[in-house]
Image (cartoon, rainbow, N blue to C red; front, side, top):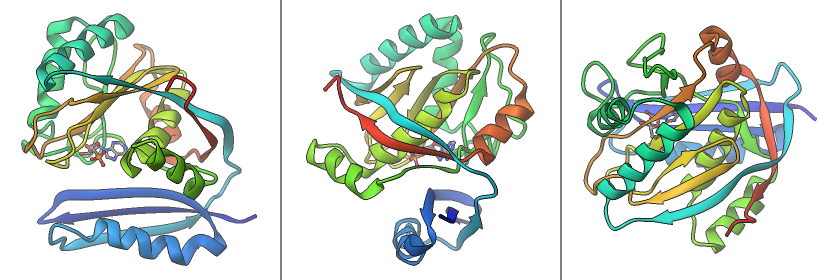
Length: 250
Ligand code: AMP
C-alpha cells in the first residue's frame, strides 16, 4: 500500500500558530487534508503550508504506544515541582538548571521571546543543542495505523485529540535510544494539561501550565554522546506507525 506523509503548519506575521502531522494511505488523503486545513486555519492565519510526500521507505511498526498514566496536582507550580524532581532523577540534570529551562518554555524559548516551532534539545549537562533556536527540532512522520478507532477510545475515556497526537509524537521520540525523557506544555492558552514522557510512560499532568498563558513548547532530554545530526534525521525523516495505544495503567 502506498503511504503518504502530510505535514501542515500555519502562522501569522511569522509567528507559529499550529502544526499537524499524519501518515495516511492514498484513499484517505483527500478527507485528511480537508480536516487538517480546518485544524490549522485559525487565529487569522496568514500563512498555511500543507506538504504531501509519498513515504520513501517502509515505516517501522510499533505494537504499542507509551502507556498513559494521569497525575493531578492542586496547581501548576506543584506540578512543575514534581516534573523537575522526576526529570532530574532520569537525566541527572541539576534541579536549578531544569527549573530555568522549564521557565524558559513557559515564557517563550525562542530568541525573540516567542514559542519555538519545534522542540528544545537538552543534554545531561543541561546544555541546549538545537541547531536553530527559533525552529528547534520537529518530530514528524509518525501516526497511529487505525487513528479513528484509537481516537474514539481515548475520547470515550475523557482524553482529547491532542493527547492522541502528543502520544504518537512522544512514542516516536522515546523509541530513539538517545532520548531519555520529554517535557511538554501546549501553546494554546486554554489547554493547561501537559505531560512528561519517559521510556515507558506518558504521564499526563494536570495542570502543568497557568491558564491564559499562550507560551508553550517541548524539551527533549538526550544522552551526552548523542549525534545531533542523526537525531534530527531520525525525528524528521524516519516513518513510524503505531498499532495500538497502551492503556493498561488506567
Ligand atoms: P502543541 O502541543 O501543538 O500545542 O505544541 C506545543 C509546542 O510544542 C509548540 O509550541 C512547539 O514549540 C512544540 N511542538 C509542536 N509540534 C512539534 C513537533 N512536531 N515536534 C517538536 N516540537 C513540537
